[in-house]
Length: 232
Ligand SMILES: [Zn+2]
Image 1 (cartoon, rainbow, N blue to C red):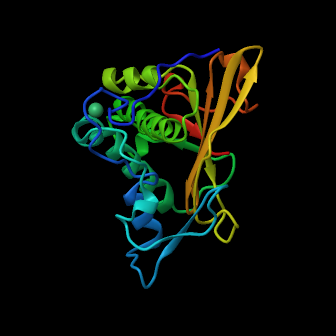
Image 2 (image 1 turned 60 degrees about the vertical axis):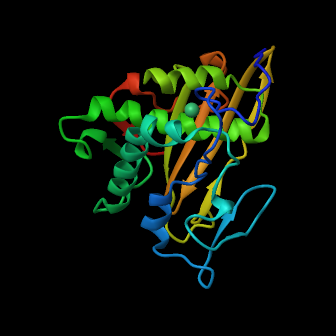
């Protein structure tokens, strides 16, 4: 069973400095790519299990942000390269012509010529940050100190795997969806998964305290697997 130190909401869960910053639940660039300019007169809506159809009247809306749980340094300079990597990859996926389909193989180096090895780590770390922020926000019993160490060291957590999903336009899932984290305890070991999607691009994150106890049968992807990703 995972044991974690009680989180204090005034401290950055990544570095322990005062938490004076709030991370976007959904990356602002993802929202802009899909929905363009949003205002109070033309809002978009975020869906979650506890709050369906939550109006988002602007890109800086608190309805798109976590509570303050990290510091400005970690939210900006420490993770800027992680954020940028996902921004480039998500745009690249959306702009592919012909569009993606389930089972398609994406060579990540087509989005990052000559620099894929570093960028696949950054993409993994971007979702590790969002997953950690979600866990802290909802008090999920997950080892956020391990996730923090991965982010600080720039080393992907070995027990987190990602599954990239193509969502057909017109699908009921063609909107913004974030979480919640679903937890399962198997013989005293924790497994969890969490879902993030904006428009046609979705990502399942699967965490397992022991890898053989993953909640999903799909093995997903980890940077150690290389720069080829199969769309689910
Ligand atoms: Zn920090």
